[in-house]
Length: 260
Image (cartoon, rainbow, N blue to C red; front, side, top):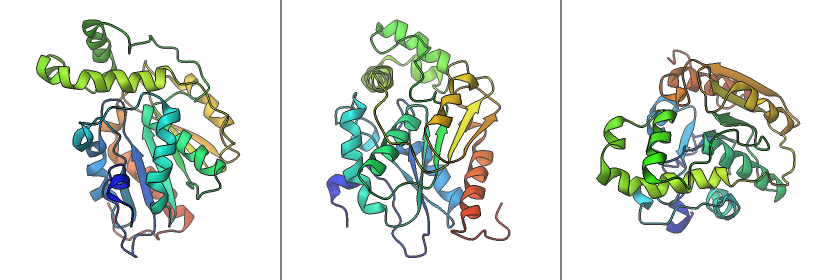
């Protein structure tokens, strides 16, 4: 069994023999593992949703957030390795998609089990230059104003100085992680990539995502959903159904009659 140190990264893993497939989910900027908890009930018993908890949030709030993906990925490899004993996929939204891609590539580079699918949601192709304003070094007021433009954060939170005082270092760290990112020399993935985008997302537009096709030797599909950058909040059921259909097509686990 993984140690307590490693378990801090991977939340709610089900080790029952009946679990045939795992979906590791990586959160977006400022978020923690709990954003994917509702997915777990919707996909079980077919798929075990395993949210990834990054340092600096929720039960890891006391830890320093990681601002360099080159530091994060080796730690994630150690943490996730014990759970790669059955077929699995990666899902990431926003910076979570970048982390999912880098981790998949590093697993392949090390000759470890690899995901049989990567879902890259609301993130540009990794080697596409960031077309947006650099935010992590802005003043607090400027940064808060830019965050409003992303959506997904309620005005109640943004206008609460005490709450934002605690969250601001995490937001800055997460934005620094992807704004300072430089494409790494990873091997071409061998699994399909599903790219998800929002039709009204002005942060990551469809043309920013076309380069994902160069990141794998397998099939790349793009699916657009109505909404802005946080389209996953209003399209959860359609996204989960897409994932479930992909898993069932692979033959594990079999589709369950009557599932809604």
